[in-house]
Image 1 (cartoon, rainbow, N blue to C red):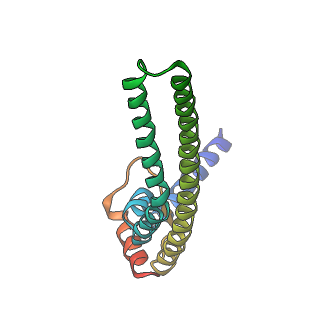
Image 2: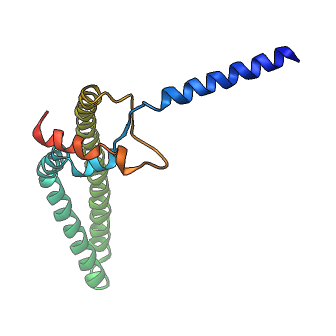
Length: 167
């Protein structure tokens, strides 16, 4: 019984010491989605990707219009065409559709790959900025995800500003 009191007293002292230590704990929070959406490097990367992939997107649009035109022509003139001519156009339409789907898939895969590369570089840079802020302002912990956070601990604006300045 006496041993149990000592154990409870020791646990109470340990909890009290932990609570006292937590009182001067400095915690920060960053909103990774905001950094991805609003940061200057993210906007530059988005414009770069748009510029880089614009020719392929235009080619896809051109091919899609071509397929729709051929399909409309086939529907309009299909009844008056000869059997072999209609079959040849249907096969051409099927081939063009398959090529279009392949090109579309490759476009999406390439775009996603490049977007992921850019995001990786952005978050690498953001993490360096976050570490600099944490070290200079003596943060003990900075979180990226939380169920609830107080605006008082949100340092996202400081990170966005530092990224815009090119730090």
